[in-house]
Amino acid sequence: MLSPLPRGKISSLDFSAALSLPGVVGHLTHEDVPGDNLFGCGERDEEFVASDRVVYAGQIVGAVVAKSEEVNRENHMLTFGRSL
Image 1 (tube, rainbow, N blue to C red):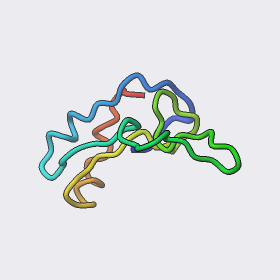
Image 2: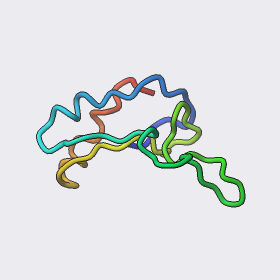
Image 3: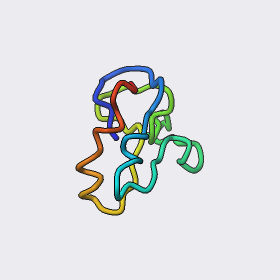
């Protein structure tokens, strides 16, 4: 899941619609990243998966895990709603 917004606070992520679909088996958030969730060139100051704020459009905020790429592609927008 990529943020559609260039900036914003993540108030919640609702995976319930996606998780109810056939072929969807789980989801991932910043809490699932092992270690400190940071990277960067020179200074490690950017999160792999946004935890509480997004700072650019397209920033990773989570992932839906499905049995196939096709299932993921068909249903990836169901997780957003009004979550950002």
